[in-house]
Image (tube, rainbow, N blue to C red):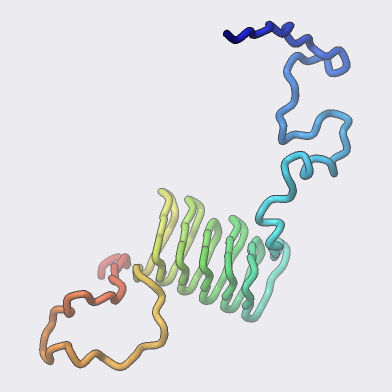
Length: 185
């Protein structure tokens, strides 16, 4: 019913001296370097969004805020509030950190708040973490409290349905859970 013709075995190319062709995401020898991103289908998603970087030889005193992405390889003394934050292995922040996504490979001394927070094995965090999702790799240092749950708007008036003198929270209370990670507490 179907006829399949046999194709000859691929012959090694004499110009490269190797029978193994290069991987599709690596530039071929002698090809211009600018052609590599086009061959992969364009620039990566991070470069499309414009990742800003504070390099390892820079120190910054003051607060940083914005909706963009930031990678910190240097040192910041002040609060950081961005859309997505990566603190590199040489990065250090002394102040509060708030972002939708926080990845810590370096050092933070201050509170961390985000939807998703990841502490990589080289991380050092001394402060409270408020997150919907928290991941702590083996080897990461963390001292503080974890508040798990959604970040809330400013506190509203207490609900009148709570009975006075009741020590148990009402059924359906969606306040974050507090987990104390400080030694001796």
